Image (cartoon, rainbow, N blue to C red):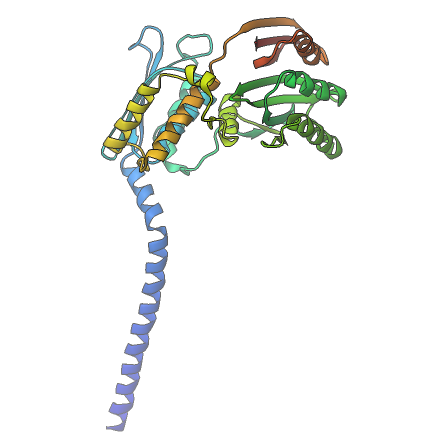
Length: 364
């Protein structure tokens, strides 16, 4: 009897211990599963429904047609557009649609010369970046950003004013920096620029920390000017990114879409607002936007941002194209002539190709 009671107690203890142990293990598993459930479900869904990319060079006479079918997720359209943009392709037409949980899009694209895309290497990158292989990589990726030892990138934002580009160029020349490539946008009294420069002595990226600090300090002082109400910003890095997209991001962060209530002149030059408002109403009613537009204030802000994005790319005035042998200080000399003749640069594209400077300026 004693043996039976002793063994029964041991057996009951073993059962209780086992139940408690397995309860602890199952609790840990459930906690981990609940934390990773969303990620694992998304990965499984992508594997069961891999993206499909079809590239057709016969369907359209003047463009390459790229069709992308995939599971609809937040940011998918941005991802597709960024891949195409980073490859320097021009989107001439796009059909965007969404049906339930499925994303369907068709793009007509050309190369920079307006011709069909026939380079097999580029077509292969498109297929791999957007197709089946992309579903096995992280959904959060960095597009077009890499390190460069060839040049230093300088990003500038500040208040626009006559002669600003001339002053910035003069500072860079004084600091013995050569401007290889640059793009300058102005909108709503704000200015933004991305400039790729090299050290005059080495012909490569600027690595001296003291010199980099000096460049930031002087350029920031120039950008601030006498305007105390809005700030200026200078960022120096060795990264390479898509310049036009970066300019949009910089000007948006600088809130260039905000307008004064009495800005009558700009009011007349605004894009076709009724079309933009109608577009926003369709998006709101059909709930295609994630998240949906919830208030009138939010709707108006989206309209302002869309209008600003359009206006940044539209400039009027005198257009000057300059092609000559490149040299140190050329940009400073050219922009000084503009300033001395009371011309304001509203947009500029500066490039260096095979030892030649190929520059385009829009002035008023």
